[in-house]
Image (cartoon, rainbow, N blue to C red; front, side, top):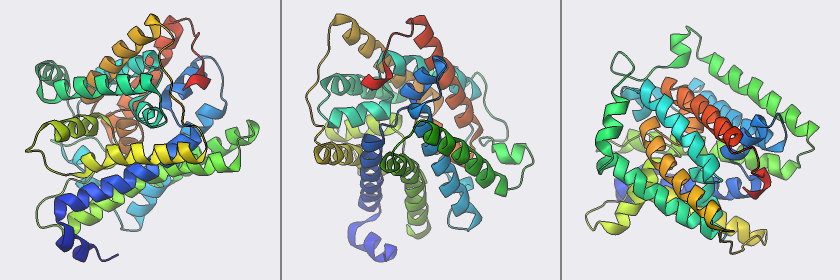
Length: 353
């Protein structure tokens, strides 16, 4: 593909949106077919199990690590130029936001990315939860909740004007990132074997991680040929959900990677569900699930924006480049999710996600 010719033909912003659409479509197809979900994995783990949902999550995470770290070693990508690494990170935001997001995803019965995938299949519960999530995320980004987010994020930030590179901080060679990814992949494959996960589901689980690497690679390539600065980023759903919402509400909004990503996920998940004959309208079973979903979505909207990313944005995308606060946020999401499941009595069924 002649990227320069494409940029000259479409323009930089539409090209970024096109790349977001492509990344989102791959993500949506793979996530729908693999049933990838951090909430399901944390709940399963909290109940003392290491079954298919944990295996799928680990395979997705390790695939992203292997692809991204491998691309860096080959010179196809440089994570140091990514915005997540180039600006200070917030340890306090990662901890508080991660805990809130983790608790919220259990209440809402799905993380933000999973809600978007489920919404595309006809799940009306996820449509409502996703809208609340996007509105609260926008309120936390530049609305009434933004001062609180700023105060909490400023309590403890990384030093040196940049986020922490965990590999550099541990004085490890760059090859260590790839090795860590391969070790986690081996664990994931062994769990998959024990739980007899089908080959196609393994491929699609890997596809979710590949989508993260694809987003990194496309935006990095675009940044190298664009005249104006282009943000190097990949799949995440907190900021993009807010930006996509405003794109349809504000006539002055411009196309960008984020605006293409969210519709891409919806389209990909819809196509995958239609192919698998899994399109089905679903609603709330009663007032308690509705209340929990609304509270959980709000917690995820604020928590994800405070943490610097959602279960995908911080948990997989940020984790794949070893951003310190991303790994901290991911750890706290696991803690928050498991704690909330225990507080709720562990009655939720992972299969509903």
